[in-house]
Image (tube, rainbow, N blue to C red; front, side, top):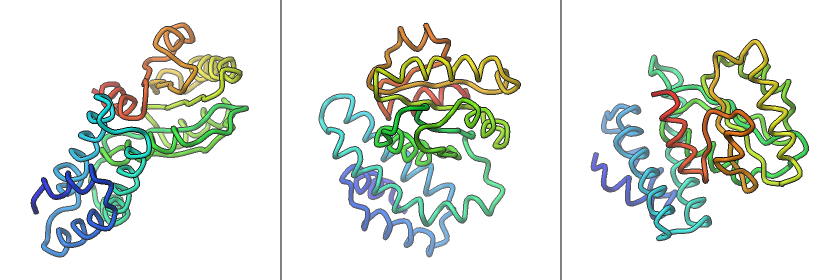
Length: 209
């Protein structure tokens, strides 16, 4: 297994190549966890760096995330059937009243790519549903998205509800989306803020140490 091949294929957004490289590595007896940590994860982290420096843009990042998913589709059944511990458990969703999901979906794909177990609740998610899922999944992180400025109050209400609930002490709250910035995240009581999808993944990794 040559990690550089995986990294290049993910950066290029070539899902067919990623799928083939993963299949070949598995046939050669490579461990699924090694393929993930040495091949796919460095690839998607490089994509995040290129996005931050303006060398690629959202369409390219989405294509890379989908390419990485083509490889993950082969690895996830193996990883979930072994004793391999996920990096952490993340509950993910867009707040009540907001039906946008592209940013959230990219965050979910990238988080899976670095080894998180992700439970995506979708869009228009109430505070109660977030709390129930955090409890049921024993999640360490809840990632909450909003794209509309009109749903910022809903995000604030959701953060307060989670903090004040029986799961408040067990979970870290990560927020993001177009109307959100560091100042707002701090004001509403979130633990961390991701400016974009790659940044959200880095912040999630930092939250679990």
